[in-house]
Image (cartoon, rainbow, N blue to C red):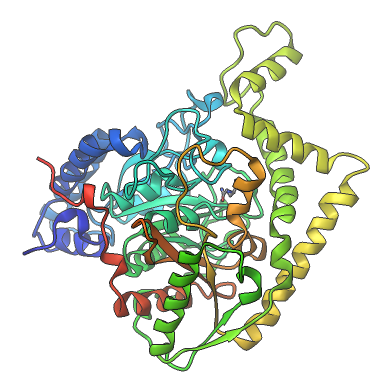
Length: 493
Ligand code: GLN
């Protein structure tokens, strides 16, 4: 039997459109029907852009009919996190304060996608301003894990992860400041990729921690990660931190052999500290690499254990600066009760931001305040440099580093009340943001309750292609990337 469309990769969908086997319009109406059938159950979207998408799809089909060449994402539906801007559409960041904000310009990533005839189908749910690990801090709705609806999909890019896992689109975009693409990827059993810092333009991504933020894709195959990264990972003059060279041909290099390569594992970091099923899946994954001719070697990354304190100083400091622009004057709604200028700032911010965001702004303002800057902010920056040195040293002895993505499989919604326990979710993901290196969640197994588990691979800066290649070889040797959550593994009428 032919693969149903919801399980077809983006690469194959674009191929079919280019060869006239299916129209872009048909693909878009198919996926928009799936959104109508399933989104109420999973809560992936904040905005359904089906009408806009159908218009775009018709244009792609007209282009083909006119004999013009089609782009690399011809007719591929893509869902994007609602902190990435599309001109003329709302960008809420799942915050009450931005509920009426309409983007006046396109982000570079959506421009690149549309230039390649990709079609944006909707905007997805997130933790408010991307601060969280469970999507529970969204001001608007809850998001549920398609593998187990009582559980979180992870966060903060939970809506995008669910969209791909439940087959609402083959690719979705998230943003990863401390793990927000990789951790939901792991919880939902799909790939979630954080590129090298600077590989993807941040222009049009609402800033959280500017020295850490990267837009990254979710997909069900390493091929699709490579494809979308070739499209998105290009130079952009509007982001001064964006790399000025074109990406390597990721797709062409996926099959290059990994035989004889060395994978470093920082065992002492997680020994005895992670869920036993997570450990089992990790060890089995390393055994797969050994059978593919790789050597596994223990390494040390001593500074990674300070990731959480380092992150909650640097990320909150940057967030307190970035979020200062939401003041009731520009962008945001203004408090109806404010009478004076002071009240406009105070009341608009107080009514508009949720508790977690307020907590981060307060923390960030504190660590930057006179007298505390040296003790906290500058100290954290020094530790960050030591962490980068750890990685540089480690990569002298290995080609790639592997470790768990998250210490546990998906937890139940509402199960974590204490912010620090929530923050500890990111103990294995933050270091890649701090060091600016690429990190990828690779789907690799299940726990005893059939909840997905992934592991993470990290590479040196700009070795993005290498990371994808290692994932691709694992995918070919196993079958986890084909797994689909049973309740959504069906066609809708
Ligand atoms: N969970 C982390 C936080 O709450 C990371 C978020 C992210 O990567 N956007 O800040």
